[in-house]
Amino acid sequence: MAHPGPYRVCFVCSGNICRSPMAEAVLCRMVDQAGLADRVTVDSAGTGDWHIGERADRRAVQALVAADYPDLAHRARQFEVAWFAERDLVIALDRGHLRTLRAWAPSESARAKVHLLRSFDPQAGPEAARSRLDVPDPYYDGPAMFAEVLRLIEAAAAGLLARVAEDLDLPPVQGVAAH
Image 1 (cartoon, one colour):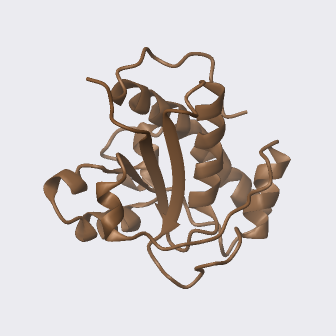
Image 2: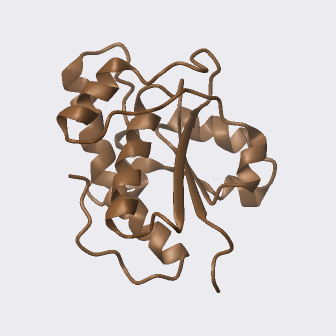
């Protein structure tokens, strides 16, 4: 069955200035490379409200630019419960976000939309190693941690894009990479 309207993915981290905007940039590039920009929309938000309206953290922007992603025209915002009805997947960057989003979900069908990003990374390891499924918060760290966070996001993005293609009843996406 054809999916009505665009398929919508929202990445969620704490303040929407580091991890989630980086994940948004990565998946946007992959969606564009796969020729799905007219079928898939990607956005991001935070669980907290303390950075609303701010630009992405300069270190997140620097890590993306160093990896040849375009500079972000991003403003932080907080996830709203009403968005569950408008999003097909809500992607948490760590287990704390996962718990928060599932607690906010108004129904079982909404809870079923919430997943950890790294659960789409085949290299992340078995579910038993749940702590390895978190994308660490680089906010209190330096440029090397932002580069590592970008690497973790990129590693999971192909699997996430495969899930999106499957949900849209499309053939597997070939030849799309984060870089």
